[in-house]
Image (tube, rainbow, N blue to C red; front, side, top):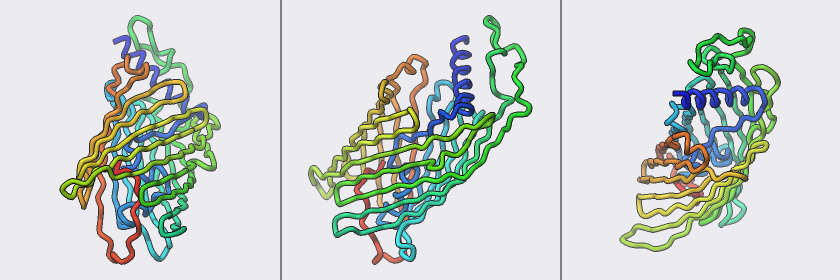
Length: 329
């Protein structure tokens, strides 16, 4: 009981730090490429040959301590010939601290397509977002409410009546993407204007930088099923936080398996195991984060993630563009 109190208190204290000091980090998905618009706005219209694509994503992080971080997203994108590129929309919601802090953002994305030559395509993407943060002060726990023996029994002396419970603001991001038949690379910068998201005082949302590169290479062909291997690297930096992700996927016919490792500069965080099924009209993926950092002693139970993508046909198939060679998940 006492250990649970300490863990919950630590998480709530972390939420307050995020709100007051500007050290916030964006929620992260482990199936990076099953949620491409969230990763890089230049992905708008890049998949499924430019035909319409819809994505649904769900992530439950640390379920062992009570649905502490739950993130949802839904997106749609396609190539539009009249605009010379791709259009997309994405809506995402993140619930932290068992719902005490809710973040909602909705974005409109556009990516301009440039065919450099027959082998190389480059896309420049732009994203305009509206973000809203809501904090339920009444459900927060403060240090002066805790009795060492009996737990939470006191009323807080903190002055929370006059604190704001909602913060909303516009947000802007941009990205670049390049790909050939077997290789791809990209760069994105989110929160370019570093908007103020503070509830108590000024707290600027740090710019998040993402760089990713990978390839997709055939190994063998058997009974019309191509076996491919896809090594990948993804790097993200947001203020002082840095994260390195190394992974490989193996695709045999409709079945995809993947293994990633995730670590920061000082700590090795987790292994990510992934399984997916890919069909002509849809794909489905499941991944599990195995915590190997010091948090494993807190019985967090890692993280579960689900993804579903619907591939829709193009009305004019003569306008199809090359599909990017990045992984399915």
